[in-house]
Amino acid sequence: MKHYRDCQSCGHPLSRDPQGGGTEADGTRSSMYCRECYEAGQFLLPDISASEMQDRVRADLIATGFPRLFTGFHTRKIPLLERWQPTP
Image (cartoon, rainbow, N blue to C red):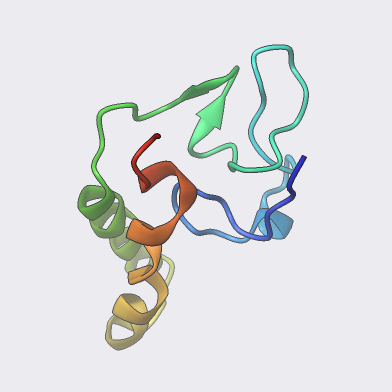
């Protein structure tokens, strides 16, 4: 099983997730997604798009005092994360 450094939905570092990540349906920790995005084997916002996730993360960063100028840098890779890739 591949382990990821960042949540493959929102891009937040998994190491900064106080719970250590979201959970799978069987209760085990997800190695792909944070608890803000994924719990009990399901996405908490299943119908959100990658661009909507970028807007959400950008707003969260600004709310925590992150300089608005740098939010684009921190959200530009969200569409490249695993969740947003087409399934074969």
